[in-house]
Length: 75
Image (cartoon, rainbow, N blue to C red; front, side):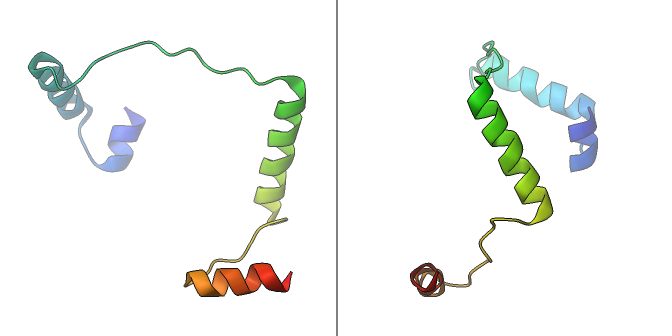
């Protein structure tokens, strides 16, 4: 519901469109379990997310591929 609200769409409209798509055969449903990472991968992901939030180990944005290649060659 929050996602629909953030998108500016009434949740009832989402349900109505999803129901129509399901009936028309344009929507199929399935269950997907959440993935569990092993301890090592979990630590690495947490460390990477911490770095990202602190702006560490991040490349600057580039306006062209040439600019990106130059940056990589210069480091």
